[in-house]
Image (cartoon, rainbow, N blue to C red; front, side, top):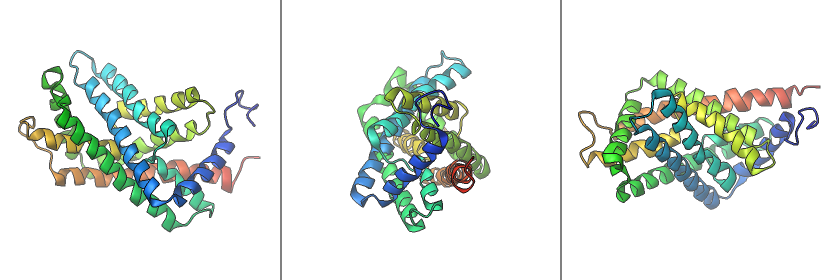
Length: 271
């Protein structure tokens, strides 16, 4: 099949089989390594969000330039997840392909998601605490700190449906990045596969639940430094953002990527 696509990359049908095999391994992974890899993934995505804020805090950049450049640097987070190895809640929605083929149980899938999302929160919020303690937000005359708070306030003010739909769109692109990275055979292949979809979702302003688990706790920490202005990020506001975004991320990854590809390549494989 690879000859048909003119490269040594795995074909889409081969990617589907690889995604199922990897999903089976993820669903059966022991709790401790799963949790530790989840903590790493949360921190990796947080690092990407940190670089995104660095770009967005520069007032000299135009809207389109800052959006695209911010998305480009954010992609380092998912690239670290894919290449270094980590368990990311949004990427693990592809596990439903293994479930749909009867290779793992629903309980195993839910166990993976529950463990990983909590571990991602620990990693992302833990990084936020370290970044806050390091004084990073004071760079550029405090513009980084102000930008974090502004972004977080805007996120908590999103209407439920808007946040959910942005979560759907975000995770379609995240899961497509993971899917295409599974088609690569080299580090360069995987980097190219990851960078463009991630840049697209960040530049478009879509909502990634794990990135928000870094940005919103950091904003709450920074508020104690007098950077909140007239608005403030609250735990209730954070929960009000994360609930619809997680629902949207789930729908985007499980239904619009894993579900559709399962129907195409497993239920009704092309002849």
